[in-house]
Length: 295
Image (cartoon, rainbow, N blue to C red; front, top):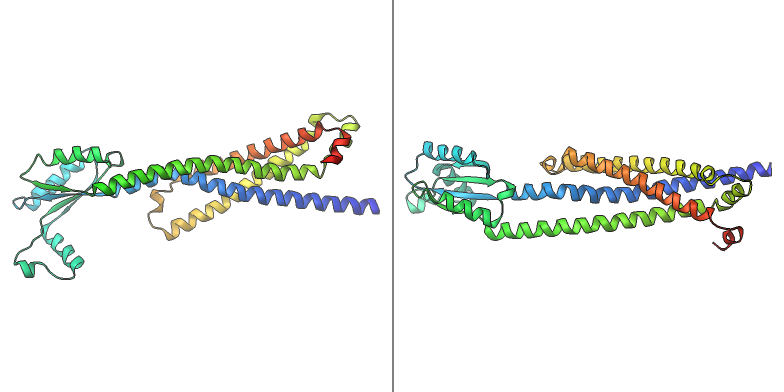
């Protein structure tokens, strides 16, 4: 009866250790998954920001609506153009009136706005050197295009900031992988530490190291995969919330990034748990009886 009660207490203690290990590993994998997702989507975010910068082409007064739209269609075929929108003088006046709160034509007597083309360039061309080259090409047609305007300082600042963010995320990912390994390793070591005398007893009766090690490895694989599954569930909920409350998030967080993130979470959950368990079990397998009491 006493032995049965003792075994029951040992089983409950071991079960709590497994649950604690699973929860701690899940939390670590959630953080790791968030960083991996951030690193993967940083490139999409960079492209999204760059491709939403507007280059404005001011058209001459002699350019008709048909000519302006035809010029827009020709620009749309260029490799550097993502989207070209024609804005007539009347539409520009309407937008200017809404922005200013009054109609400027009432004071001037005529429409002071010119027809224009608004062009979003491809992300590869959203840098100072490429935009200067594009501007020079566009201004060769002085009869139609009188001026080209874009926020040069803003583009340079965005490119510098995005580069810094990418570097920070990469460094953070490397540090987090190291921290993940350290945290999971400590949790695994504590779990195996509680069973160190069982390991030594099995050694005394002649059990091979592989026979002693395999149950721990199988258990760690199960815990790692379960923790990865729970972490992916939490990450999926976070992404769903972002999709629901942030329109356009699908352009930045796309399905390939989600698949790679999930695969990374399962990979690290499997590898880290397996490696930590293997090192910890081997450590106790190499210990002598006297060393077990000094731990």
